[in-house]
Length: 76
Image (cartoon, rainbow, N blue to C red):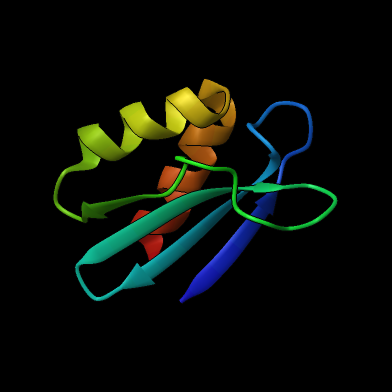
């Protein structure tokens, strides 16, 4: 399952992409205009490490959007 969050100026690059594969979550920051990955922004996590995912998302975007993305991840 793949979803892009078009956040704009509140996120690194403007878009946060989340890919969920069984127990793995891949998070990547994309450039808003070109939709290409920002270098060194892609990370992979085990879904059971919620705190690590939250900390990484807080580095990419604000705490408000980080909470919204985490909410999406754990609903799916």
